[in-house]
Length: 345
Image (cartoon, rainbow, N blue to C red):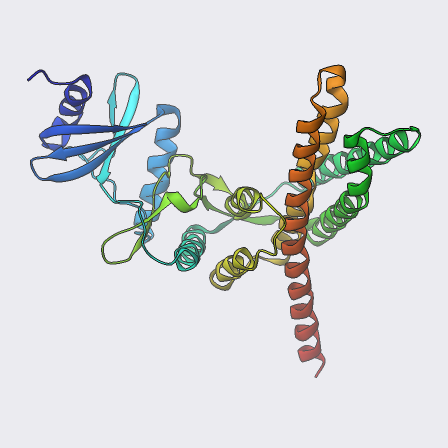
Protein backbone atom coordinates (compact mmCIF):
# COMPACT_ATOMS: atom_id res chain seq x y z
CA UNK A 1 0.00 0.00 0.00
CA UNK A 2 1.36 3.40 -1.04
CA UNK A 3 2.11 5.78 1.85
CA UNK A 4 0.16 9.04 1.89
CA UNK A 5 1.98 12.36 1.70
CA UNK A 6 0.88 13.09 5.30
CA UNK A 7 2.37 9.85 6.55
CA UNK A 8 5.60 10.41 4.62
CA UNK A 9 5.95 13.88 6.13
CA UNK A 10 5.22 12.58 9.62
CA UNK A 11 7.81 9.81 9.21
CA UNK A 12 10.49 12.38 8.29
CA UNK A 13 9.64 14.71 11.19
CA UNK A 14 9.24 12.00 13.83
CA UNK A 15 12.66 10.50 13.11
CA UNK A 16 13.91 13.26 15.41
CA UNK A 17 11.89 11.64 18.22
CA UNK A 18 12.64 8.03 17.25
CA UNK A 19 8.92 7.43 16.74
CA UNK A 20 7.60 5.31 13.89
CA UNK A 21 4.10 6.37 12.76
CA UNK A 22 1.94 3.89 10.88
CA UNK A 23 -1.20 6.01 10.40
CA UNK A 24 -1.89 9.76 10.35
CA UNK A 25 -5.27 11.48 10.63
CA UNK A 26 -5.36 15.07 9.29
CA UNK A 27 -7.17 17.62 11.50
CA UNK A 28 -6.31 21.03 10.09
CA UNK A 29 -2.96 22.13 11.55
CA UNK A 30 -2.89 19.06 13.79
CA UNK A 31 -2.08 15.52 12.75
CA UNK A 32 -3.28 12.72 14.97
CA UNK A 33 -0.41 10.26 14.80
CA UNK A 34 -0.84 6.55 15.56
CA UNK A 35 2.59 5.07 16.20
CA UNK A 36 4.52 2.11 17.51
CA UNK A 37 4.39 3.50 21.07
CA UNK A 38 1.16 5.47 21.38
CA UNK A 39 -1.01 8.23 19.93
CA UNK A 40 0.40 11.75 19.53
CA UNK A 41 -0.62 15.17 18.27
CA UNK A 42 1.81 16.70 15.77
CA UNK A 43 1.11 20.44 15.47
CA UNK A 44 2.21 22.72 12.63
CA UNK A 45 2.91 26.37 13.48
CA UNK A 46 4.27 29.48 11.79
CA UNK A 47 8.03 29.84 12.43
CA UNK A 48 7.55 33.57 13.06
CA UNK A 49 5.59 32.77 16.24
CA UNK A 50 7.47 29.60 17.03
CA UNK A 51 10.45 30.95 18.95
CA UNK A 52 8.33 33.18 21.24
CA UNK A 53 5.96 30.28 21.85
CA UNK A 54 8.75 27.89 22.83
CA UNK A 55 10.42 30.52 25.04
CA UNK A 56 7.15 31.23 26.91
CA UNK A 57 6.46 27.53 27.43
CA UNK A 58 9.99 26.93 28.72
CA UNK A 59 9.66 29.91 31.10
CA UNK A 60 6.45 28.47 32.54
CA UNK A 61 7.99 25.00 32.89
CA UNK A 62 10.95 26.52 34.76
CA UNK A 63 8.57 28.36 37.12
CA UNK A 64 6.79 25.11 37.89
CA UNK A 65 3.65 25.63 35.82
CA UNK A 66 2.75 22.30 34.21
CA UNK A 67 -0.84 22.78 33.06
CA UNK A 68 0.15 23.15 29.44
CA UNK A 69 -0.11 20.00 27.36
CA UNK A 70 3.49 18.66 27.53
CA UNK A 71 5.70 19.36 24.56
CA UNK A 72 8.09 16.49 23.89
CA UNK A 73 11.71 17.35 23.13
CA UNK A 74 13.53 15.70 20.25
CA UNK A 75 16.43 13.35 20.91
CA UNK A 76 18.83 16.30 20.73
CA UNK A 77 16.73 18.49 23.08
CA UNK A 78 14.85 20.71 20.61
CA UNK A 79 11.19 21.53 21.28
CA UNK A 80 10.27 21.90 17.60
CA UNK A 81 11.40 20.59 14.22
CA UNK A 82 11.73 22.82 11.14
CA UNK A 83 10.45 21.04 8.04
CA UNK A 84 9.62 22.65 4.67
CA UNK A 85 9.49 26.19 6.13
CA UNK A 86 7.13 25.20 8.95
CA UNK A 87 7.72 24.35 12.59
CA UNK A 88 6.27 21.18 14.11
CA UNK A 89 6.03 20.20 17.74
CA UNK A 90 4.87 16.99 19.37
CA UNK A 91 2.56 16.47 22.33
CA UNK A 92 0.39 13.68 23.73
CA UNK A 93 -3.07 13.30 22.24
CA UNK A 94 -5.78 14.53 24.61
CA UNK A 95 -9.40 14.52 23.56
CA UNK A 96 -11.22 17.87 23.80
CA UNK A 97 -14.48 16.02 24.42
CA UNK A 98 -15.27 16.80 28.03
CA UNK A 99 -18.13 15.04 29.80
CA UNK A 100 -17.74 17.19 32.90
CA UNK A 101 -20.27 19.86 33.88
CA UNK A 102 -19.69 22.83 31.49
CA UNK A 103 -19.86 25.38 34.32
CA UNK A 104 -17.25 23.48 36.38
CA UNK A 105 -15.01 23.08 33.32
CA UNK A 106 -15.06 26.83 32.66
CA UNK A 107 -14.45 27.55 36.33
CA UNK A 108 -11.37 25.34 36.22
CA UNK A 109 -10.21 27.12 33.07
CA UNK A 110 -10.37 30.51 34.81
CA UNK A 111 -8.65 29.14 37.90
CA UNK A 112 -5.80 27.80 35.76
CA UNK A 113 -5.58 31.06 33.82
CA UNK A 114 -5.22 32.91 37.12
CA UNK A 115 -2.41 30.51 38.14
CA UNK A 116 -0.69 30.98 34.78
CA UNK A 117 -0.81 34.77 35.16
CA UNK A 118 0.22 34.64 38.83
CA UNK A 119 3.26 32.46 38.19
CA UNK A 120 4.45 34.52 35.22
CA UNK A 121 3.67 38.00 36.64
CA UNK A 122 6.44 40.56 36.89
CA UNK A 123 6.77 44.33 36.91
CA UNK A 124 8.38 46.41 34.20
CA UNK A 125 9.37 50.06 34.08
CA UNK A 126 6.94 52.28 32.18
CA UNK A 127 7.79 55.51 30.44
CA UNK A 128 5.48 58.20 31.86
CA UNK A 129 5.42 60.07 28.54
CA UNK A 130 4.30 56.93 26.71
CA UNK A 131 1.53 56.34 29.26
CA UNK A 132 0.34 59.94 28.88
CA UNK A 133 0.44 59.63 25.08
CA UNK A 134 -1.67 56.45 25.26
CA UNK A 135 -4.15 58.18 27.57
CA UNK A 136 -4.46 61.27 25.37
CA UNK A 137 -4.90 59.16 22.22
CA UNK A 138 -7.56 56.92 23.80
CA UNK A 139 -9.39 59.88 25.33
CA UNK A 140 -9.43 61.67 21.96
CA UNK A 141 -10.86 58.54 20.30
CA UNK A 142 -13.63 58.34 22.91
CA UNK A 143 -14.47 62.01 22.40
CA UNK A 144 -14.62 61.45 18.63
CA UNK A 145 -16.99 58.55 19.24
CA UNK A 146 -19.23 60.82 21.36
CA UNK A 147 -19.18 63.47 18.68
CA UNK A 148 -20.13 60.93 16.00
CA UNK A 149 -22.94 59.56 18.18
CA UNK A 150 -24.43 63.05 18.77
CA UNK A 151 -24.11 64.12 15.13
CA UNK A 152 -25.75 60.94 13.92
CA UNK A 153 -28.65 61.36 16.35
CA UNK A 154 -29.20 64.94 15.15
CA UNK A 155 -29.07 63.86 11.49
CA UNK A 156 -31.65 61.13 12.13
CA UNK A 157 -33.99 63.39 14.08
CA UNK A 158 -33.97 66.04 11.31
CA UNK A 159 -35.61 63.55 8.96
CA UNK A 160 -39.37 63.43 8.54
CA UNK A 161 -39.27 59.70 7.85
CA UNK A 162 -36.45 57.67 9.37
CA UNK A 163 -35.26 54.40 7.91
CA UNK A 164 -35.67 51.29 10.13
CA UNK A 165 -31.95 51.45 10.92
CA UNK A 166 -32.08 55.14 11.88
CA UNK A 167 -35.12 54.59 14.10
CA UNK A 168 -33.42 51.64 15.81
CA UNK A 169 -30.23 53.66 16.29
CA UNK A 170 -32.17 56.47 17.99
CA UNK A 171 -33.68 53.91 20.37
CA UNK A 172 -30.18 52.68 21.28
CA UNK A 173 -28.52 56.11 21.46
CA UNK A 174 -28.96 56.69 25.19
CA UNK A 175 -27.46 53.30 26.15
CA UNK A 176 -24.46 53.82 23.86
CA UNK A 177 -23.93 57.36 25.16
CA UNK A 178 -24.05 56.11 28.75
CA UNK A 179 -21.51 53.39 27.94
CA UNK A 180 -19.13 55.91 26.37
CA UNK A 181 -19.44 58.20 29.39
CA UNK A 182 -18.61 55.33 31.75
CA UNK A 183 -15.70 54.18 29.56
CA UNK A 184 -14.19 57.68 29.57
CA UNK A 185 -14.76 58.03 33.31
CA UNK A 186 -12.85 54.82 34.03
CA UNK A 187 -10.07 55.85 31.64
CA UNK A 188 -9.68 59.15 33.54
CA UNK A 189 -9.63 57.28 36.87
CA UNK A 190 -6.96 54.93 35.50
CA UNK A 191 -4.77 57.82 34.38
CA UNK A 192 -5.11 59.70 37.65
CA UNK A 193 -4.19 56.51 39.50
CA UNK A 194 -1.14 55.68 37.36
CA UNK A 195 0.28 58.94 35.98
CA UNK A 196 2.99 59.09 38.66
CA UNK A 197 3.73 55.37 38.76
CA UNK A 198 6.87 54.07 37.13
CA UNK A 199 5.96 50.39 36.92
CA UNK A 200 3.24 48.18 35.47
CA UNK A 201 2.47 44.47 35.80
CA UNK A 202 2.77 42.10 32.87
CA UNK A 203 2.18 38.36 32.51
CA UNK A 204 2.47 35.62 29.92
CA UNK A 205 -0.79 35.86 27.98
CA UNK A 206 -2.25 32.68 26.46
CA UNK A 207 -3.47 34.63 23.41
CA UNK A 208 -6.35 32.37 22.34
CA UNK A 209 -8.17 31.54 25.56
CA UNK A 210 -11.32 29.57 24.75
CA UNK A 211 -13.29 26.63 26.08
CA UNK A 212 -12.03 24.30 23.35
CA UNK A 213 -8.42 25.30 24.06
CA UNK A 214 -8.58 23.77 27.53
CA UNK A 215 -8.71 19.97 27.61
CA UNK A 216 -8.85 17.33 30.34
CA UNK A 217 -6.98 14.09 30.83
CA UNK A 218 -8.48 10.86 32.16
CA UNK A 219 -7.76 11.98 35.76
CA UNK A 220 -9.73 15.22 35.32
CA UNK A 221 -6.72 17.56 35.20
CA UNK A 222 -7.12 20.49 32.80
CA UNK A 223 -4.43 21.62 30.34
CA UNK A 224 -4.10 24.57 27.99
CA UNK A 225 -3.50 23.88 24.31
CA UNK A 226 -3.09 26.24 21.32
CA UNK A 227 -0.45 28.26 23.11
CA UNK A 228 1.25 29.42 19.88
CA UNK A 229 -0.04 33.00 20.08
CA UNK A 230 1.16 33.51 23.63
CA UNK A 231 2.79 36.85 24.32
CA UNK A 232 3.78 39.24 27.08
CA UNK A 233 1.08 41.70 28.07
CA UNK A 234 -1.49 42.86 30.59
CA UNK A 235 -3.57 40.08 32.20
CA UNK A 236 -6.75 41.57 30.72
CA UNK A 237 -5.46 40.73 27.22
CA UNK A 238 -6.75 37.20 27.88
CA UNK A 239 -9.99 38.22 29.59
CA UNK A 240 -11.32 40.82 27.14
CA UNK A 241 -11.28 38.67 23.94
CA UNK A 242 -12.91 35.79 25.84
CA UNK A 243 -15.70 38.11 27.03
CA UNK A 244 -16.10 39.59 23.54
CA UNK A 245 -16.98 36.10 22.29
CA UNK A 246 -18.96 34.91 25.32
CA UNK A 247 -21.27 37.93 25.66
CA UNK A 248 -22.58 37.73 22.09
CA UNK A 249 -26.11 36.51 21.48
CA UNK A 250 -29.51 37.32 22.92
CA UNK A 251 -30.03 39.50 25.98
CA UNK A 252 -29.04 37.62 29.11
CA UNK A 253 -27.87 38.18 32.66
CA UNK A 254 -24.62 36.25 32.47
CA UNK A 255 -24.30 35.00 36.03
CA UNK A 256 -22.02 32.15 34.92
CA UNK A 257 -19.56 34.53 33.25
CA UNK A 258 -19.66 36.80 36.29
CA UNK A 259 -18.81 33.87 38.59
CA UNK A 260 -16.00 32.68 36.31
CA UNK A 261 -14.45 36.15 36.41
CA UNK A 262 -14.55 36.23 40.19
CA UNK A 263 -13.01 32.77 40.30
CA UNK A 264 -10.13 34.33 38.35
CA UNK A 265 -10.03 37.43 40.59
CA UNK A 266 -9.96 35.19 43.69
CA UNK A 267 -6.67 33.61 42.59
CA UNK A 268 -5.25 36.61 40.73
CA UNK A 269 -6.84 39.89 41.87
CA UNK A 270 -6.51 42.76 39.45
CA UNK A 271 -4.89 45.88 40.87
CA UNK A 272 -7.06 49.00 41.09
CA UNK A 273 -5.58 50.57 37.96
CA UNK A 274 -5.85 47.29 36.00
CA UNK A 275 -9.52 46.98 36.96
CA UNK A 276 -10.24 50.57 35.88
CA UNK A 277 -8.75 50.02 32.44
CA UNK A 278 -10.44 46.61 32.14
CA UNK A 279 -13.88 48.13 32.83
CA UNK A 280 -13.17 51.05 30.48
CA UNK A 281 -12.40 48.71 27.57
CA UNK A 282 -15.25 46.31 28.38
CA UNK A 283 -17.83 49.13 28.54
CA UNK A 284 -16.81 50.76 25.25
CA UNK A 285 -19.56 50.20 22.60
CA UNK A 286 -17.01 49.93 19.80
CA UNK A 287 -18.84 47.38 17.64
CA UNK A 288 -22.17 49.22 17.79
CA UNK A 289 -20.41 52.40 16.66
CA UNK A 290 -18.61 50.59 13.84
CA UNK A 291 -21.92 49.14 12.65
CA UNK A 292 -23.49 52.63 12.56
CA UNK A 293 -20.47 54.09 10.73
CA UNK A 294 -20.51 51.28 8.17
CA UNK A 295 -24.22 51.81 7.49
CA UNK A 296 -23.80 55.47 6.60
CA UNK A 297 -20.61 54.94 4.61
CA UNK A 298 -22.16 52.23 2.43
CA UNK A 299 -24.88 54.54 1.10
CA UNK A 300 -27.16 52.94 -1.52
CA UNK A 301 -25.20 49.67 -1.42
CA UNK A 302 -26.40 48.82 2.08
CA UNK A 303 -28.87 46.08 2.96
CA UNK A 304 -31.35 47.63 5.40
CA UNK A 305 -32.59 44.40 6.94
CA UNK A 306 -29.11 42.98 7.54
CA UNK A 307 -27.89 46.32 8.90
CA UNK A 308 -30.74 46.46 11.44
CA UNK A 309 -30.10 42.85 12.49
CA UNK A 310 -26.39 43.60 12.94
CA UNK A 311 -27.15 46.73 15.00
CA UNK A 312 -29.55 44.75 17.17
CA UNK A 313 -26.94 42.05 17.84
CA UNK A 314 -24.39 44.69 18.83
CA UNK A 315 -26.92 46.30 21.16
CA UNK A 316 -27.54 42.93 22.83
CA UNK A 317 -23.79 42.54 23.32
CA UNK A 318 -23.61 46.05 24.79
CA UNK A 319 -26.39 45.30 27.28
CA UNK A 320 -24.83 41.94 28.21
CA UNK A 321 -21.45 43.57 28.85
CA UNK A 322 -23.15 46.44 30.71
CA UNK A 323 -24.57 43.95 33.20
CA UNK A 324 -21.11 42.50 33.89
CA UNK A 325 -19.48 45.94 34.06
CA UNK A 326 -21.96 47.39 36.55
CA UNK A 327 -21.91 44.28 38.74
CA UNK A 328 -18.11 44.36 38.96
CA UNK A 329 -18.02 48.13 39.51
CA UNK A 330 -20.54 47.88 42.34
CA UNK A 331 -18.67 45.03 44.06
CA UNK A 332 -15.32 46.83 43.80
CA UNK A 333 -16.87 50.02 45.18
CA UNK A 334 -18.32 48.12 48.14
CA UNK A 335 -14.91 46.54 48.81
CA UNK A 336 -13.25 49.97 48.96
CA UNK A 337 -15.95 51.33 51.25
CA UNK A 338 -15.50 48.34 53.60
CA UNK A 339 -11.71 48.81 53.60
CA UNK A 340 -12.09 52.54 54.33
CA UNK A 341 -14.53 51.84 57.18
CA UNK A 342 -12.16 49.27 58.64
CA UNK A 343 -9.26 51.74 58.58
CA UNK A 344 -11.36 54.43 60.29
CA UNK A 345 -12.50 52.11 63.09
